[in-house]
Image 1 (cartoon, rainbow, N blue to C red):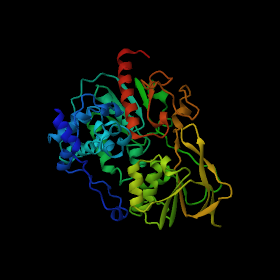
Image 2: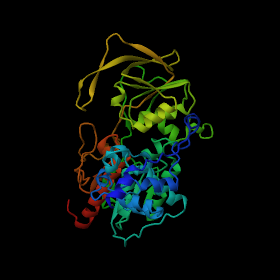
Image 3: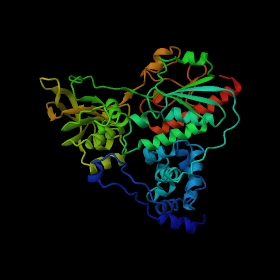
Image 4: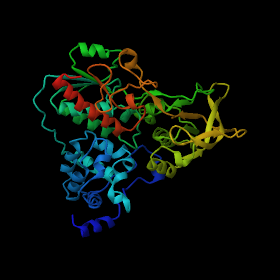
Length: 472
């Protein structure tokens, strides 16, 4: 690209994605961003200057050839753009919606040095949606069967990625999913208004059409153990069971009616569709005043979900300041537009109940920031004598999750770290047990969808090599 064209492209404004209006969307569970139009997508794609050394590719955990697919969009070849993405990413409609591009591919975009970066995530979403909505999805050519079988334990982002990559290498793959729907955190954790479940269903169906077998309601560790899978004909096993064990605060009153873990609350609303109660028969306490404890993306998902269940007020209680909020800036912005309140530098001390054991208030204390802790953030310190109460009839604890313990408890020769996460070789995904690989939140703790998918890609390549060479 000649310097004159580069300079012209650098001047093009970033395209604004249409969204539902805040006061309208807070009354429904429909998706908030409406997606780019074809004209907007082509104009946004023209902002890419096709760098000789595209840093964005290295910023993507699954190494999508971003300049190539963006160029295809700029040329109007939307279907080929989607197929280029799918060479390394089997869940593009998902990633285009929920990945933190601002901290990954877009963070290192050269265009962003003098202005706003190219909207890589929105372009990825556009291409994948266009392919699906125009019934242009095609199945890649699958090589001749290798005769090798792999069991994937857990149908979340890591497991689905492993399955898709391995079936494209000619191996027979079976995914064992504990729930009645595949998708893991994509279906039970992320709200409908951020990730419509029909999108996840479509991505899973694509994998099934490629030849991946998915067995639902299959709790490995109870139905069969890892050792039994290996003894019953599987040549390798990938463990991607996630971080489904909620952390609690261990303060008085956590057992009161109306106090939820974010896991339970979001699972009830998202997977079990309690927002449609009684059409769906899983209820959830809607509450008049809702307090969400935590500052990450799960806290934001919980709070923005609660807003849609029509309470008087929903508040985020977070012990640090706004600068330390780990949630995506876009989610914080959307929450504030929808009426979400933030009670920062505040920490709960106890939950207070009424005589019937129902939550009525949360006692909190003011905090101030002291010296940095191990995370590099300034440590919150209590301000003595600053206790106060917040009226609440629902509280949602969203302070992180631990590793799902079932596989470690039933596979004693898999090494764990001090938090109960499976330890792996970071380059290969190999565990301490021969033939067993792992990745995603069961290894990392609670992390992002795209990091789990990156783990899955590395593990798939390593499993393929192991099956071909037998070398451990």
